[in-house]
Length: 316
Image (cartoon, rainbow, N blue to C red; front, side, top):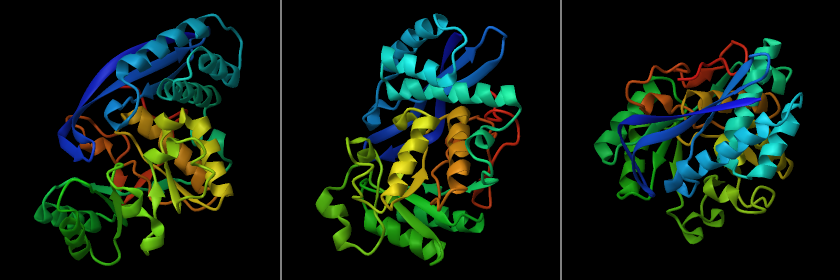
């Protein structure tokens, strides 16, 4: 099995400010795995060191080790290939890229979308939330009103960046009572600020979900799962099963991934939606990039599952 790795930088149309700081561009590592018959699958690593993840250089190093491992193995199944890579370097973001590529290759070989390999009856579309990145009340109000008109049922507001209460109030007033508000603190809140015993709204964990034992601890109403943090589609589905077994809800979000990463999460979300309740997912992020043709557009607050084989999306 041959592994090719290409580095690509995508710029945001405008910088996104969070509690972690300002983000203006994304470095992605696109990968392709090709078997001896010339059948390829494509994946993507989306390192985000500012959010506590690995650096692109660290992920690139892991992928270089995987290239050696994959080249030495013949006629092995995807599970064995992935485990061999994990034994060489247990780096979740890099493993996610290999896992995504192997699922894409499997779908292409069988002529089926990845979601059809994960579930007999995957959902045909996935509900997503809009992002309201404005840092002033007027801007947030305008964005909330636009999202409501476009059919979104849920919007996400980054908090922990100043004037939070006023911005949230502006979004509620402009979006109307039917629009669900999701507040994303990106770790800026302490336990005392976010503890659910003191609030009437539902509380989810995101970055904290990576802590040992967090998924099965039942410490929140919902858990945000991400392909890159989990280590791929396979590991994400296992994590979702654990959360649901403890009575929690799950939803998926991107780490500002490129099209391949978003497509992988969309297929996983479609499979999960066929098995139980799935909250609005944070996958409507491709439109944030400058000059990128969005192959997975949002329509009426939902992203349709691409019908083609594999991920249904071609690499950049």
